[in-house]
Length: 539
Image (cartoon, rainbow, N blue to C red; front, side, top):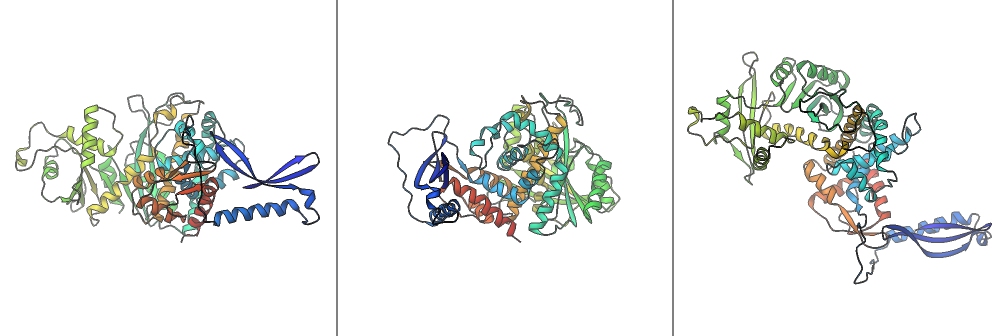
């Protein structure tokens, strides 16, 4: 409810009104007619201020009231064409984390800078909050804007117009979020830093100068590399756009930069398939740094292939969906006595993905499926005589990594390696993001803006998971956030029906009421501010 002031000639008429939605439009109903403001001048020094306080008391009483809510519907009432916007609690919680990291304040502060686009901050919030929940195109995010907890009154073309302005803020926003993070969580432990390397391919339709600053794949799809640094607790610190296939010198420059800028004593590089893996590992070992790197099979690597196929030594999960084993071996190409830990993991779902990918001959987008396909292709045509006692060497679903961290358990090493997947998933760029684009954006700006949006959403999601005690993985948390939405009933009321242990943990971490069935639009606004205050108070 709010106080409505209507001008009638020279006089001002006061009434208490309430907004509600009907047929997809916002309407207003009068709750109480008060009268002309000047009629109360002899009783109150400032009648308008008095009645604004009165309306706030009504709102407070309504919020505190536990009286049942009665809503009536005609038996034959129909759903409006296109449906009604939902109330998205999950998006609200992500916004609270973005607010705690200072994202909104940052864009408001630079709104008047030369070259800044007025709606850039809200576009950024919309895209980052959406990306934290699921991978979707900019078009789909914009089409769902009516359900976003904050007003998004801009066209689709304006989303793309904002991208160059967003790209220009990348370094400053990363610094701003780090300061905000340390203000609410204290100084980071950067004594050990994880550097995660990943590469991405991009479609380029309608982008300007699409070939610049990117590396060709030979298939018409340029690729670009991303390096992300995480602190000892697994929370992002910064990222760089770099070569899609960095060599040992590229990685060394980045490692030295992290040590210089962050004071890190040691850097552990986590990487997927890279043509320079052996040289990178050797260089890192030389300086006492570490690595957890994908180790694809070579066609002549019969010993390791037989070891992977041998069922001896595997430990299996209770569900039977995973099994894992490891061994200590001499590091290839390293001085005698240097050892690494080989770890192999088999997953039932990885197997299904690999077989489907091979059948469809589709371009691989999953680290796990890509590796399984590669190991299958590398298998010799005839069984190795030395492996007659083993099952057939069908290596679908096996993922193999080598690590310098020989004292870590198998599970700990694969938890580290999975960061590649955790990083790759939210950073995907969809074909619909660039084909066709409604506004010609320089491709380099598009890439920088995309990575900044994805990095920010990744940061918010990691912070939420840290507040949840890392009890659930990123996919579980993102899916729960996506499901936490309420269906519109009548007026401003929404009905929420999703609840799970993950959603309870999310609400507890954010400090908001757990499992509320009914909420109003006002409740949603309060939820964001309440969650932000709680997040900022956590030690």
